[in-house]
Length: 350
Image (cartoon, rainbow, N blue to C red):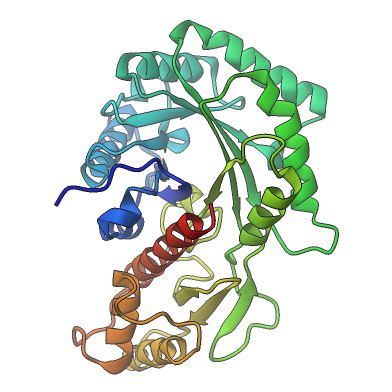
């Protein structure tokens, strides 16, 4: 089946793990064509030598290339660059990512790879880590000068990290200030604003059976659209899917993670989160109970909406596999439903 040829309108920052890769691969063609992920290769599970680090990176690039199928995406390898020998060039459709905090050799290597591949280079600026304005602008300007030899299209990936609700909209003020500083520095091919508000750990006052938390990242998108108006092009919307902003910086989303098990569902303005608290022989009953809580809400869009919604419905009514899966399966379903909803919402309200 041929996929629609559309320009991406949504940039989720996702860890290159089985759960997120499977979710992107499970999107319907119309949704997948609107989504251009920023993949981050997570760190390996132990302190590797150069050979193991290179193998880890090559496997991740192969997995990303396979699921992307020639569609454009950015790939950030910040956790697996132990030295110049660890840098690997992926397929031309995968755009390397650099940033001001990266080593000079990495910036140059990314620019060389982008020039060879022809699909461009992402410049990820982590606003939450910025120094004083002058030093920040100076760092980006220095980076742009260093990679100018590549003469390739550049994309500005403004990463605000975690954002929270606030009456004075601090994330909006910071985003506008950052855009005012950075956009004039270069004729960027695209400008993306990334922000996330999915909880990293149990929200304060965690309720039962479901907790509802605000989507401050989505509110930021609306505020930016309203504030910028028609004065200049709107930045592309980016978030972290149905996961917290630090997910890609961790080896795994299971194990010692304090929030290792949860079903999740993205509504128009909130996240519904149902924690699965205990292991043991009856855990599947807790999972099915949480799934029923979600599908019984007025916000559930029905099993036909996405593969994630279908999984939740099957889990809730017991029509799926006998088991109820592992946290990876719950995260995958959450990503599937979230990515589908956000892409369709952005298409309706560009």
